Image 1 (cartoon, protein in one colour):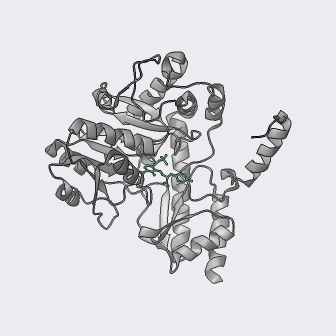
Image 2: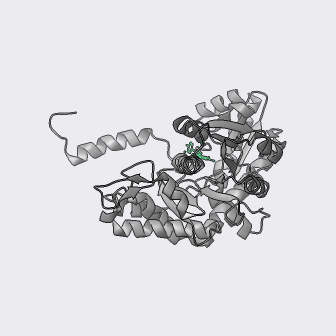
Image 3: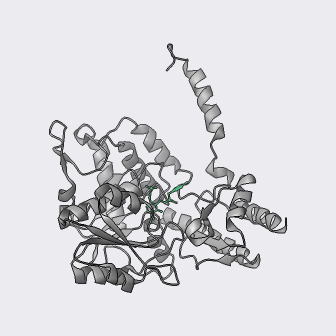
Length: 382
Ligand code: 0PR
């Protein structure tokens, strides 16, 4: 650290220099991220609540109120009963961690196992390592959704919970949560739904008239849901969400905090930003269902446009997109991703599918896609 501090303007100049090296969503070259340009009101909320620490909520009653209200909006959207509860956390990883932590502690088994789809997000690898739970991966069918028969075959006396995807990270694939819910109920197991991405897409797709099967608390086996405001909620990072059907579930993940303003915490982290809750609240209030519907429609229309262009260029689409993620294959997908990167484009290479993944987030426009497809065409010819 320097001995004598710099003036504010010098510090800001250095910050601007560093910021100039970051890629900006608005430039329309980030096709690999599930995050996006934040909602402007949510950004302002973040600034206003920058001091707030919900790790010690007795000091920040206003922030706590906003967290409760933001959680209520998510619970209502996902058809939770009155017994439900939730927390705004740091992201999908912490949300999934808390769900599995609660399931593991409730089950009290010596050799716990968790059944997840083969397509589960890599956060479950971390979670099972931390919690010392054996990770068991169920097979997928030809639509890249989990095969319920395989899930059932993976269940044994050590199983603590099963997980379903509502928007797999790689393809946006939606598992048959109805079938998983029945399996969970028949085995007396909790079903955790990872809707980190899809939880703020599917409810609006349904309102737009798309056929969407039940995937949330309307199914009795669903005991917890991850749904992240910092993905399709357009809330600044970090803002994740974990929802429990029954607030009793949080009693399994309580840690005593004897000298703080509240007697216990249920989160993995201690000090945590009230600004995340305030920003989520502000995004939900300022966009409302209408705003979300508009955003989702735009992203879905962009997805259909891109899929059509990719097909016309003879790329192999991996699975019919269910939401705003499309993946395709070409003779050398990895090389294509590297070449795009040299042209300033960020797309994901998914090794286990040997595919290129594109996430159509709200920061993208049709003009960006037209430019992108043109570059793809040039690379294909070269
Ligand atoms: N569950 C699902 C289904 C996810 O897609 C993700 C992250 C998580 C859980 C974990 O969430 P957090 O990263 O919030 O803890 N999905 C993105 C991915 O892995 C995360 C991401 C976002 C990656 C922006 C890159 C990026 O630029 O693709």
